[in-house]
Figure 1 (cartoon, rainbow, N blue to C red):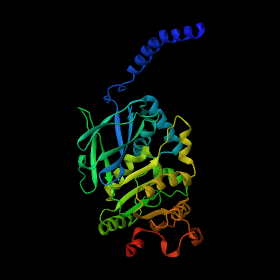
Figure 2 (figure 1 turned 135 degrees about the vertical axis):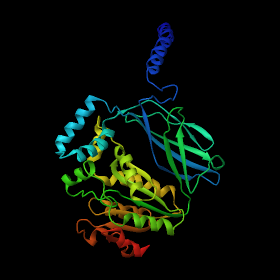
Figure 3 (figure 1 turned 180 degrees about the horizontal axis):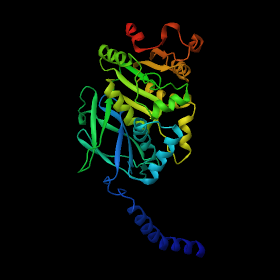
Figure 4 (figure 1 turned 30 degrees about the horizontal axis):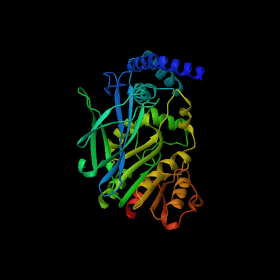
Length: 357
């Protein structure tokens, strides 16, 4: 009994010391208590899709990334130079693209921090960032506090000096949605030739697959409230480059569901991992969140899109309206045997799909 009492007494005496030490340590982490964004930090928000909880409330996911660009860092410039040598950069144009697209991979991710956003009429504190600088928060919001325009709302960080904005798409229970891959589906990447794939991803101007923007726009025009979701194995570090490219090309706005990787740990291996499990985990929640909607699934034959979409159809047969596969390697019809023949189509360009809208 006396020993137990002494242990408790020692713990009580030690606790204030540990608390002061912990508080002091956390205070050194910029933003830990305030939520302020340092002048050398940036926040990038990824477009997300909100779903109805009930007749009065929406479930709104917010996904952001907090980091220091550190573009003047000598160490990071040396890393870019090393990658340039590996990729055999030939000219100033390739070097410019490489620098723009690789810098997001070598930024200083900010962990243990939070930001506050204003969405609609209220301010919300987001979850603290993890080691890769990402923060994911789901907020249930009353519809009376929201003011979407054409099914979309922007929100912004509470920051006196700068403006960091994000987008949320409010998707109704009924309607049509498009889930689309990116590489070799809407953007010409040539994944099957790895040398060309890396060059097209990091060294060259992006090119869209002919006719795909026309197809997306026509489907949107003919189906009010049609939502678009890009589900890709591309990493979030390429998000800004991809979004700007799609906007410049005239593609409809979309939510983005990409891969989270961090070059300092084993998550980097996810960049090279089999996309089957990853894409299933991204697509299934979309289908489950909107059981009353129909979906067009668009991909290519270069990797596992036919098998992934067949598996999605088997799990959600009433929701899959059509599966469209860009055939880039003379894929045989047998890859689609698990689907009814009227449910799928191979295509080469988006113009091949226009008559079926």
